[in-house]
Length: 310
Image (tube, rainbow, N blue to C red):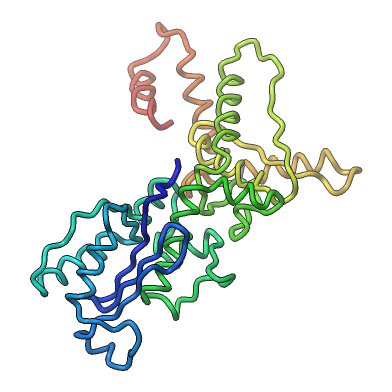
């Protein structure tokens, strides 16, 4: 997934008409900023204040067949549409990208896809500073963070290559695979697919030959985060025993036993525990392996009813 080099990032502020607009070029530099003279709240502003019609003509010229990146395209396009209608000029057709939708498509589940939440979850900074909610909804400020968010989603591997010892998930440390944190699915995608293939190979190996995968890397590189992604993918039908490295070499057996019990007590998607899933799947498998001639009508009804969800 590669981002287009011919794009601009645009953020608008205003409700029924444009209050302000900021345009960031594909190199992250401010290309255009303007405040509408007709908007009452802008009476104190002296720099870059222009008539709304002039701003929209400028914007038409700026687009110039470039892809326009918005964070919430639905809102920004609505503001622009109302503003064009107000001044009576025709808008250029825009080829646009919405980072809100990109985040929904390429990031795993998040509690919120607002610019503020995504910026904090993904450890995004502008001018070496994190997102400040008191500065939100100013066009230039939001546009700068939208630019960084777009680059983060479209080119996640660049971040890792530039800082090999940095944790790409630094802002949301994962202590065990059963936790739920924001995840960028395109990071370590190749390694993740290797894990999935290995698990599937082990499952289909009826000879029960010894197989496994060793995941290595410097501390903080995101190994446990990768295990969390694997858990999300597989926990509906597979069980996961997470055993940390023991601190006491004299109590290894107790440590393993304790961690197995803790793992089995973990809930899958907030409903049943792993142990309950294990018992349910095992029970159905036992019935399913019975001689069909021995199955009663009730047995058959149970198998049919539980085939999708034991």
